[in-house]
Length: 145
Length: 145
Length: 145
Length: 145
Ligand SMILES: [Zn+2]
Ligand SMILES: [Zn+2]
Ligand SMILES: [Zn+2]
Ligand SMILES: [Zn+2]
Image (cartoon, rainbow over all chains, first blue to last red; front, side):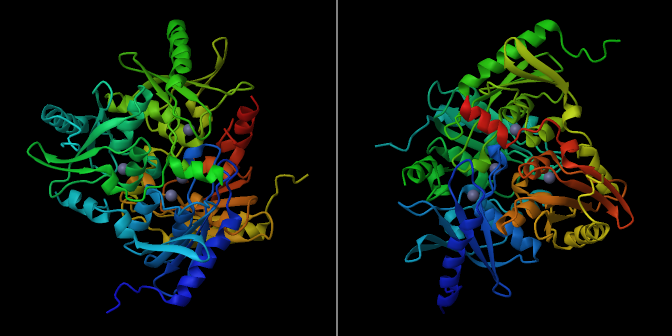
């Protein structure tokens, strides 16, 4: 049972704090909107932190969530238990953008934890945020067809 | 009543055909996976067609849906009634990727029509495909805070 | 002779004006930085206009140059004589970002015209702006190797 | 004298090897084209490795160079001495795509080392690969104007 309990209470606490801390390296001179992210790998239970990195050509900006996942993949991880996301938004929770949902989804479902502050968090699953995802299996189908 | 009936039966037929036709201009030498899209503007009821345009640097590839919406915006449109999507996928429906959901969502909700072939289609709303979207209002909140 | 004279004086005038006009449809609520682009197709000598289209998730923003080329490809064009670029920058010329240079380069070399205002323009070739480009032929090599 | 000698011979050797090693974590199921990157930070002289990470929606793919720089920024680095790039290309050197040139350029000029194999390398400066770059200063001009 408890099949949804993908992370422990201690891991949750650590992830939340790590996502808040990750904001400190945000490079966001254009939006002035700092975002931090902490990703928990499935194997090894390592926390990988990411932040948003903006660009003068706005379109080459990367979000904190994608920063974290690219970093984790470059360290050899391809399966994730959870991701926590923190931002400077004070009035609500900053959900991941569609591009980040798509990139996270490439590596399967995971828990998504939205952090307003240490004591105010919300939790959902990636599959709920990207229903009917277009994923790796669709391309395999295309090649077979 | 009929509040969801954002498009007429004739418009639906035209959109479906236009999305299939749009595949013919697809530039997809790398994936060999053609996608076509037809967007119906809210004002003027104009159909704008798009296709996927790939790039040797995979990451600069654009999907058919974004191609269509960028084109429509460049023609002065910013509100849309519906979008139809066709692909070479034979075994199922190709749902839009997360990036396209995000870019469409910038301009509000709309009907999303998934086309397998002329006689096999499926319909949903963009809001169902991108729940809890991060959108323009979130950035306004950030600036106020 | 005159091998570089890829466009006529009349075409140049039309392109410059079209790139300035194209700014009027720019959707740039975040940067407040409007950019317009006009692309001249090689066949048919058609002018295709594009503008920048921004997104709340900065990274999904598209530049005017890519907007124009995606639009042109969706209309069946794959070879271009020239591209003109206009912006709200008053103190200099806005050169295309690296992503746009890469996407334009997918379809071969072309003239690049930078427009400050109707009477102040500068001209160069795409190949000068993206030396040693990574292009379609590199991927073919990779497949052969 | 030696003003261009931004890195030592030992650093060069380490960077070249690190870029080759970085390919091993490449996630490239679609292109089958592995790329590895090693970035040398200006302060601390730390080597940060990156690899390409592809996505079923081709357009959300990231290159090895951007993977490395996002990772380095998330670790607090914003100035770089050099970047080395390795790929599976056997017949030549894989130069960075325009998007990567643009993202690297956000953090200033640096040495770019192209690696075919341990004993066959080529070196240039980022500024040579992205002449007339559109960078942070252009946006500042726009805001002043
Ligand atoms: Zn995002
Ligand atoms: Zn898409
Ligand atoms: Zn650009
Ligand atoms: Zn690249």
